Length: 398
Length: 214
Image 1: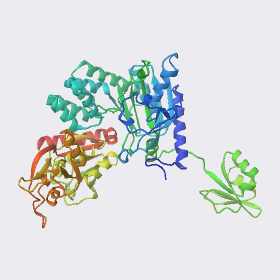
Image 2: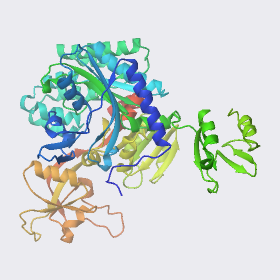
Image 3: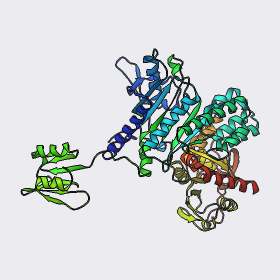
Image 4: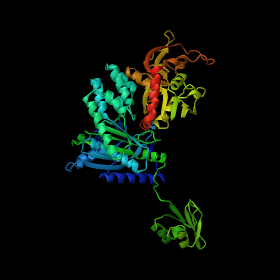
């Protein structure tokens, strides 16, 4: 038995996941990101720097001195902590990536394992549309490099919403309203707006905006709705991010989505989510989080994303593009007694599982002795038998 | 396209089908089909199933869009986008108790029967009252049974269908409070919304036009 929401991962999936993770690491490195590994336990105080709902149920324990520790619930905060603690005297920008698991309390409706692997990249110290664009470009490059063709990155902005909500004149209820907006809790939104006496027409504009996504005229409609300089600026910023991503060669990958709104309290500018056919929830999400590193007393900006490796694997399965992780392994009955021959095969690039002579018939492909000769039974095609050299030659092994 | 229609009473609700037809979707074949079923009609695949199933399929990206009741969206708070109020199947979630005069037990913490535990808890908590929830699908019958002091249910369901043999109006319940207005809503999962692009936008546009007309 293992705790609810946890899972064991077995071959061949493990090999496939490793191949995916390795491919992602190569893409991150191609943009000059350096890998960091942070401990999975942090001081609870560190993670609580961010007021995030996901922390409430987080797993907590105490060390021998009685300090409260916590299993990390994501990597963005630990990376911000690490940057502020270790990189203050380095020239900006900083680029970090990680492939690591986080642990969150599991709930059946969340369709996410209690422990989940994320591959993410964080760009710290540049606040511009170009930096935002780089983050989206790296994400697109990662997904394209793995052979995922029909993915879409929905691009939105928190700035547009905060400006829109500011125009409603909510005062005291502003925070509550933004929270309900993140939860897409429309009835709560209506009741907050009702109590605050918000103009019904303004609310209608908000609902209409939430619906605007990926359509031909979403952008022109949103431009018409923009009623303040802050909203105009947010739209202009978003458009320039999209244009830069398209310049980098990802023309069809990005759609503007004005209904996009995430619930992470440290989001501050662009936000984006990647989707692929057959997977209902985002396979990656990211955004700008200016102000996060500042909570560790270093005022630098940041933008980044994290890919949910399991969901990406699912999407690749849907697309028939899962990288084959482990090479086909030849089961060599009697190989345990002939280590030299097994080694010969391995040196030629084959994987060989050596078995005792009398092992029950293993799955194909397999190799065994029969009298003085060898028999090789491939996974597809006719068996070959003869001397050791003959068998190897016939199969193109040597 | 893969679309879902909540039909918690067996057949898909006629007003929703009327609206879909006005929007140019050929759904005539669905009128005589009792859910749960998967039906191919007019170039689309339709899932006719309980609303909760339609929502689950939307959340997991198996449907492009679905039509479900607002009551369910309130209760389940699923990760979907509510795209359009279809304005049909209008109803109100209400709190109802037996007529005064019926022997009522005065409990400090009233018992409320409902199939909407989340909505009910929230409603009473928001108004500073504590209630004991009784999860009970046939909530309007609970007060008559002595199982609960009141029920939270859609107004239309306070009186059971008299066409059903043996069924009559349950223990004369009277509406005390209105909790939320409900109607049929068009929803889409997060992925469908991001990937559906023009097709979903087209469906939305046609339905919006149909809603405007009706």
